[in-house]
Length: 490
Image (cartoon, rainbow, N blue to C red; front, side, top):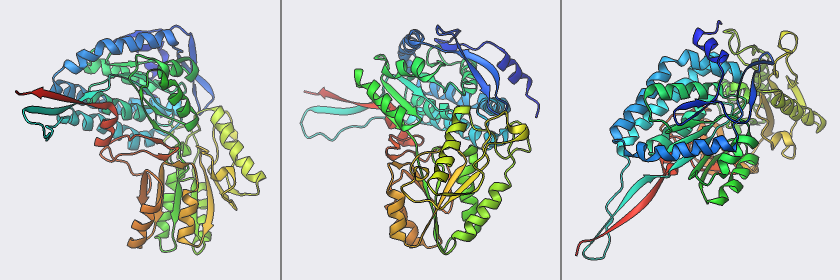
């Protein structure tokens, strides 16, 4: 696949951050952006420091009364226009994400771009529907009502696994609620966020409503999380960084929402439709190179069907074609970085040392793939609940298969973990469906499917998978605060 001319021009240009409607170089030098399929440097972007964070927060603060002061219909039209521009540039944005993330263009066009577009359109519809209510107070001669008002300046810190889509997850509800935003993309994958900044300008948003600062966590992310001019931080990433975000929020007691990691159980009961369950297990862990918070990386297979399920899953895994995300023949691209490659292979090697059996995969790509960060799809068996492979988030194309015989036992094992982001159930027993779905400690439970998302359906975690919700009406609550107004009518 040839790169589109706009993509070539974008990558070749110098990249600064967007502050107050202007592109600025930043004060901390630059950091390289790598193509994970080849290990070569694509371009460089600004490594912005606390000084630049100050400027971005100040710009967002100045823009806040402007954005809040626009009639709701005008704010809605701007958000809808941004969705239209993303739709018009979908091929270009998909290539940018494939370049610096490694995902396939096909996956980006099938999943990331449609949901990104729909998020901006969905939340554009909510702008005119945020309302307070009259309160039925019992005191005579007084009138009381509530207003739902924006938090203020939002610091949005997004991960590298869905670079553009995660920006939309934060910007959609934050902007609909009337906030202004300082957005920090992951240092590994900043390109589509910066291109989004250009589209935000083209759409006509007032300067400073959305500011985009690039850089690494310590240099850029940490001062944003700790900034006393930021009223709320919304973060998606690993739970260790989530803890740091919480610590940093204490200075001004800013509001925080966290969408953190997962180690999701995917349970196949003996009465499941096996072909569908195999397809679901396959997609749950190998989509996006396994770099998904909700990956069904703990596959619990009932003893009666485990052998056949594993056999089919291994065959499908061995049929995956690895390659550049820009190649139409590719089923799975590379991992995002050498660091992630080493981390994933380290988990597999540790599982071997612990006595697990690696049925397929567990090795990096060879030959023409050797220069990139490719890991062959991996299926591991003979695991137990004490092994790190069953407890730690691998964030790669690795599934650990464990057998079970008893429903109560498998539910207990599924819940016996610090995470609670998602879970899957495969069964044709409707009573079991509702019984197990209620018992699983997870923010989302999929039944006879896996990984379904819709902008209207809230998404988030239990336990150390974070708190707060993305998507749906519920996510607006995280960006709004309630004010009660009393009026003396006497």
